[in-house]
Picture 1 (spheres, rainbow, N blue to C red):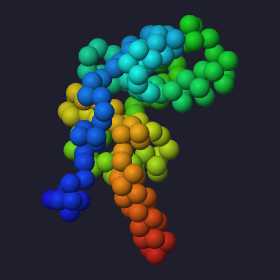
Picture 2 (cartoon, rainbow, N blue to C red):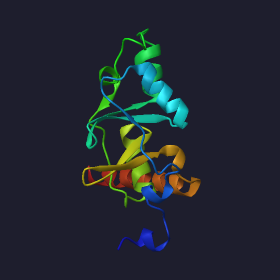
Picture 3 (cartoon, rainbow, N blue to C red):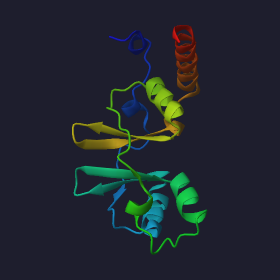
Length: 151
């Protein structure tokens, strides 16, 4: 057992505020996806084909940078065209600080939680507590020191 679990660090599944999944089809328009996100008060939506095939994720940032900034028509653009395909996913037992490290290193703010083929939710950077974010920064600093020492 990881010593951090003894100190009661939460898992990503324990930390997510919404224990439900919102999704759209890859053929849905960007406007439809934005409406789904707005109704659910979510900052992302999963793009799925059939009930269990996760194709991608679409976030508020994607709407801003890939649609608005480019002047695309939200009624003529599909989610498949602008989603982040094959997003990195983590299992529900992933520690929050480990998820935050991954997100900081890769430059994104949302991680789908997957168990087997089932999507359980989406972890957002907003779901992390300050102490968990601090632990993540400490881990990143440690990783950088080790990398500097080794290479």
